[in-house]
Image (tube, rainbow, N blue to C red; front, side, top):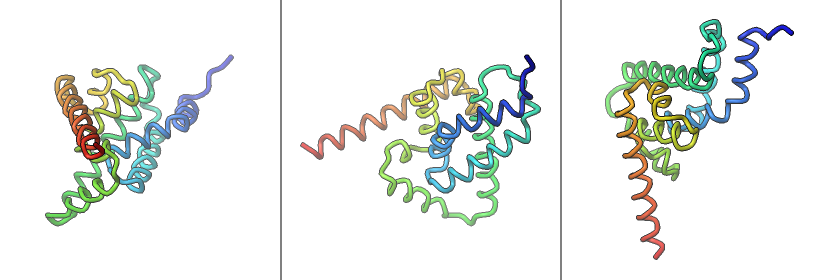
Length: 159
């Protein structure tokens, strides 16, 4: 029995991973339309670079890393193109979303999503985000504390 080509496998598996990739994109962007664009761009990039995928490790790790790199590259381009003071809009949009995870700073939300939602180990999540494991642990702790304090404040208001 012959195995399908790697690009066919990547495309099939990529479709199955789209909901998880979109969830991760939401933590990076904080906006649904930006997340959709990021997922689309990352998927195109993964398909174009599928010849680099050797089948070693987990495909989703590779795809999450591509997405993080794509977002970082685009953010760098936006910072160069945008005048100073435009970050205020994105911060207010996150608050309007009302979602505690989306309201977290980018690094905290991504760390929380990859470990607590997606189930990656700290080592895997750190590799995906391109940071050291101790940095990931710090971000994860801050994210969990932030969620706990937000939950406590909500509970106090209800009482």
